[in-house]
Amino acid sequence: MFDLLKNTILTGIGIASMTKDKIEKLGKKISEESKLSAEEGKKFVNDLLKQSEKARENLEAQVQKLVKNALGKLDIPTHEDLNRLEKRIKKLENSRAEKNKK
Image (cartoon, rainbow, N blue to C red; front, side, top):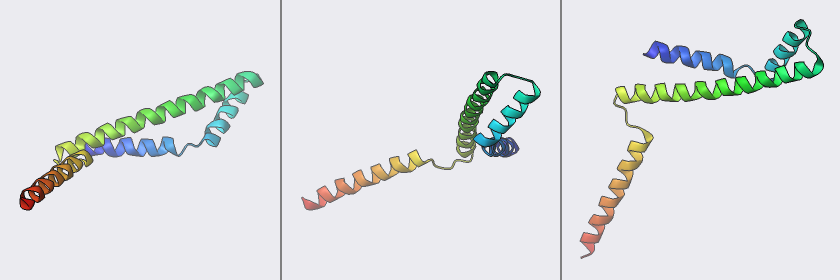
């Protein structure tokens, strides 16, 4: 499980490190090698950028899901759990304070 999580994160880092400039350079190089027209080359680069952004978003969602599942299996409380407990504690404190006033 942790190996899968580690590999997913490392893949994400690789994708995230591929900046817009790098993607554009790669797209231009492929366009030139494929002898595409200027317009076709621009469209190709734009498509690459869109696909890269979608891949980044998908990867981020997958990593979040894996982390959430891993934390759940480790029985580590989530931020939501802690917020819920804080609200309950405040409610109990307020209730106790009300009883002490009477």
